Image (cartoon, rainbow, N blue to C red; front, top):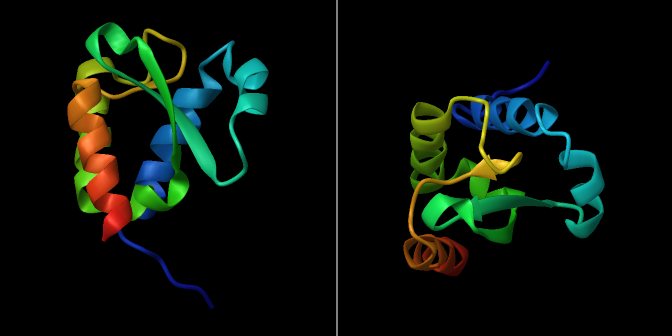
Length: 100
């Protein structure tokens, strides 16, 4: 018997597919602590940030994942998960999510 959290499972599958397509994923995984994931944000995904996976179940973060899927599909230009927003907007969002 189990339970399912709506929206969390698809987000995890999105990340697994995104990272599995990357040749860089295995070499960069060492830099990411357990319970976190690396994302690229900013103009052309230039800034790499590490965020807790606990944010995956937040509706506003899931909206960003859906935007990333629409813009990039599962072939992200940086080889990892690229979030289509400015660095400042992403940091503000993550800060507000961590505070709540």
